[in-house]
Length: 264
Image 1 (tube, rainbow, N blue to C red):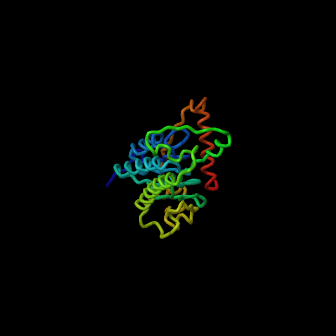
Image 2 (cartoon, rainbow, N blue to C red):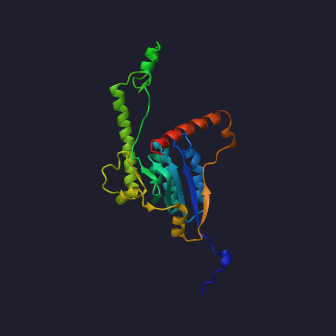
């Protein structure tokens, strides 16, 4: 007969890592591997029953998205801990890359999911310079150092080069999604075109596993007594002052523009 003492019984704990905002290498971006790494490492360190990713991101840097996803996957495999992703408003582009690192993905009926594609945006100011009587002077060692210079007319060979780079990044994104989602993905011709889907439609094409919110779904999976231990990026107090405040304001504008492209 096994003696069970109530005060010694352990309630299951799920570590919840919040990942929100634009993804980038630093500066104005709010989410990157260096910033979120301590939270991810701590989330896995205390041997939780599972780790949940709380995602609300329109995307950003493909490299940072890959680094974050790879870190989650490495720790999950090493420690044999299941990972669940929960989408709030959006997990698009790089945000979906990170979500796909989880073992399953859950979203709201109104969540925007997908945008499996790569984008490069710039501007051209050579006509403006000419109208203002300004002359561009630039000297390089290496014929490719002025790739897509915004102050020079666009060159077909530069466009071809950047398209090759984008195609390679897109291929890596597609491979990642196919590896992680496997036979859950539907035979949908628009799946990798940058198209987006809402909740139920995202489930139908296999981008998510179902409709579910973080607290009730985790209680369903781990019992009503499950406890949540939350982790996230800590913002320094002085980040709101001086030049950092300007950076933060610019980040807000860029992030607002990214969400607006998705209709949010």
